Image 1: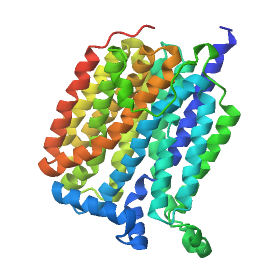
Image 2: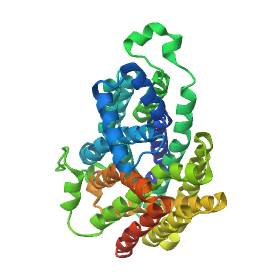
Image 3: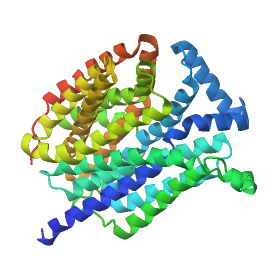
Image 4: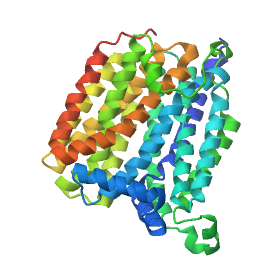
Length: 439
């Protein structure tokens, strides 16, 4: 390799970092809007059509599970999040495999363009059906993260792979910190009030939030076109890669038995537990410590900062000294301890001690999970394998919250978090059997 190539790698990582961060800003703006979205569309459409059917199903589910006061808003947000995650689950391996054939840059341009189109539909979504269509299209084109993860694998050495994946975690954490805050601010401006004539085109109280998301996608599109140079060496392209939408579990089950499959299963179980915790943490904080909707934000800000510090600092130092496998096991063990401390926390002090372990464990484990999948995979299959990896995370985000809510409402927080700790012994066991990756 020419001597100049290594000097380009830090710049390439910076470009990838900003690509992910800008994308996640647009993606997370909608998170705090779900309760208000439900109230808006109910006021506009009542209990008729698709929304009426969905609310009826939510009410029936709540009667079965034992409803809480805000069950409609919570489950409405969960359903819309799951719709997006299921599409991402199905399509991420396809985008990853396509990037193995034609390169990362072309696929990123396609997916960001599709994402931008979904935000245009959201801007004009005067009806609930059009809003759902926008979410479906957005989920289908949400292959950016898996393709960008593969690009990190392209520009890092095997020794620095998990450190590079930690950088993705930092971008992820920053996006989840600032995106929801922007979404909350965006609700202060209602375009349909200031420009009543545009209401006939479908402009609604949330169109400004959609416009912000669209703006970030367009910035990302220009950024990729101008600064994202292809990272995949033509010699490492998989010209025989099959590019089609296929059930990612089919891909996983058809992998030969070995460390890639074992790591993916461990990550899936780990993500099930973590997403269930994320979704039920507000219930626990409100019920046990009387947190309000406003004060709840500080919990997630705290978690976000712990994640950023872990993946931006601790991972970069720990992996070269201990290796990916040991850091992964420490991360899962820390997550397990965090579940117990949080679930049984008698005071706010112990709650934040538990949150520290949860953030530390997630930061250590997620960076090394993705690093190990990349290290165990062939150079010409990075996009496909990391696409399967990311799609399993999407599946976990679709299943974990609802399973956790059922256990929480039936058996309570302590039982749920104890059960989560028991579940985490599985990735701990699977991780302990992983071989040391070749460097």
